[in-house]
Image 1 (cartoon, rainbow, N blue to C red):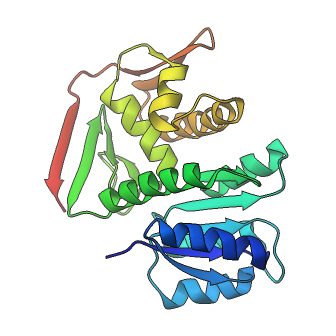
Image 2 (cartoon, one colour; image 1 turned 120 degrees about the vertical axis):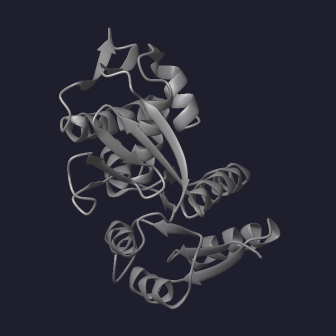
Length: 242
């Protein structure tokens, strides 16, 4: 079955070209001409990934992404925009985007990234649950949830997909000094300035989340490295049926 992509883009010429290239890559593409139309189509069909322009009539891409995230927390979202300001890109990632591409961009690179995002999303939705116990915290990677082991199951912190990827990498390499460039390459697939800024945002969030257990902390080493420090060494990696 072909993966389904929702393309929300008000530039119809650009949308036509991109839609054709995505279809040649064996994706099924539904195009919406503005944010409101995109929201309506999203509610009608199950999609594997959304590509959203940022500046659109009736409803902008950031607003639409927020509505999509409220309905489906796992679906990959890629922003495309002619706005290149760092603040706009950070806002996109803050909403929970998987990527933010500035026009014009390389379509082949976009297609490669789309395949990675869809594969990861399907892993999160698979029958297997990937759960980590880290100190006194329970991190359910598959459900994008983090909670203290003494809390009720429904009393949890919901984290964004990219935050979950970062925390998973740290959990699997806990009590090890990790170079920032290695983390960026493994989680983001790149080591650019923007990726570093985004990682810093997510690290700040993770530090607030793991504060539920004072025995766990994320240490920084001279701005070049990180370590997830776990004082309690009874770390367990669990893979169980959902």
